[in-house]
Image (cartoon, rainbow, N blue to C red; front, side, top):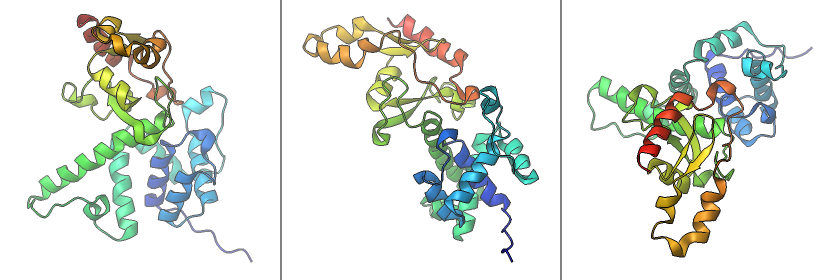
Length: 262
């Protein structure tokens, strides 16, 4: 007699869904290190978790546009949770961290390694926790959506990659956690982007401020060409999921400021 299969809990599905947005669908296999790591946390086999991610694929309109279908064994709870968080990844990130803390039977601040001993207000503690979650969320979601590749150079060394805001979070609080306000850039190009030495047009082309880069930098001419000017007019790498491609209006805002400073 077969052993009765253990039903997935809401917490486990939330943790799995968070991972779904950080792993390209083509890499949702039992051998993926991220799947192995997460499976261990929730007490499931990597094969079982990979299948759950495949279930989410059956709801994903981006996959359907590419004639890719997910698995057919999704549960009603799978669909309910997918629909609940599909357009609210910020809440998903927070609920995921709470779920992991609960599974580990520790507080969320312990899980996130946050010292709240000097904060007495419950409201302030929650704000502090959410700030940490949001910081982690933006980086992990951007690197996940871009498959841990710099969208300009394609370099795929995680320690060299950063989640860059298209429009600085201080100038657009509403979009500070919006994945469509993010680009995966290596540290060098992130710095250049923030200082308007480079920009990206609304049609995803790379533009370079050659005058500023080359002015008084004759000794570095070859380096500047290989790291910047050689990428001029090339199209950036884009996320697999169409709905998380960089927002063209936000790109226009940065590009407009770039033009003014040339």
